[in-house]
Image (cartoon, rainbow, N blue to C red; front, side, top):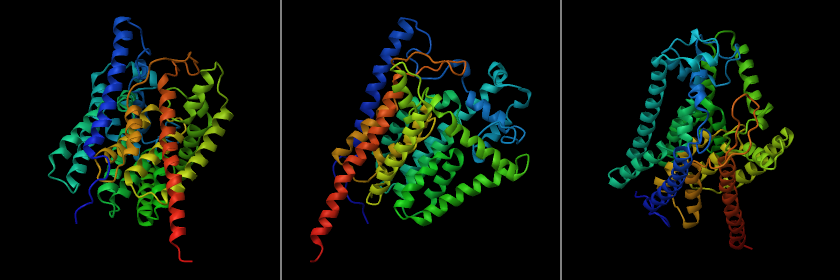
Length: 438
């Protein structure tokens, strides 16, 4: 049976709008960067969306060091989930990390073999990302449509040079694997909605970064309990099994992992606002632009209240939401916006909804165009100005314009969905009331 024809905006038009916004804003920033960095010769961080070059690839080195010797938790070396550490093993043993007694020693290492492991990591990611997009194109019902392939390659090219991805590579963050899992999840939910395979990929994503557990809301509100069970079992198994192979007892590893996750996600979240794209960064930015140090209590209260209210409103609307791309987009926006210490690379999670929003066969109306604009802008650099430095950790802690722009854009996606969704639901109830027999 043929799929229904698209109503409203075609996939080609969606791609053109997304690409136009993405390219335009990138060109504007590149001109700004050329003027400040090359003509005026201003040093980092002026006109630079990336972290300090003095600590490049630090996340990669730190995780590889943590898993060397299979004692990541009892040694208090990392809060990364077990599956992510298992994925890091090949890179960890490609170089002798045991000889380093500090992060500084790793950063000072000049052996080219160390940089080659980073290159291998990046190449593997791009190959897997491209493969995921090609798989998505291949399983679409319109497999032989030339536009699908060319469109997919254009989307891949744009996302490949997006600011969040470049930032993730610059940090060497293993979130890149989570991004691949989420892309596969979104593609399968869009193209194979009756298969539980998508749920398996969601479970893998949650087992590498935890935050994607939030995506289970789609299954709960849609009463897709088989998929919910498949995702939960996949996540639990791939989290629990590796713990048996780490040094120490299973219970001790679980306890240490639990405490480290809570410490990172809560205790000092108000004081890590640099390169942040979520609510904690947004609130801190508003404080500091007024010359005031942020109140940790206010940051936490803002996070908690916003999380509860926005999540409940979106969850209620999801009962009636049938468009996969919109569900994935809004829940991704919620997840990134509400995650404590949500760094710039978390916007890589947008790749999943962007792919199915731009190239999917779901209905896309003209009033949905703002979603294309918002997501495209979230992937471009906005490091135009910086607030005065607050040097908490001994290195630059500047807050650039992107923190304000990105935080407001994520909030705009969520509020726009709620603003359009509530009248629709009210109208549906009124319509049902009128058609009920007296």
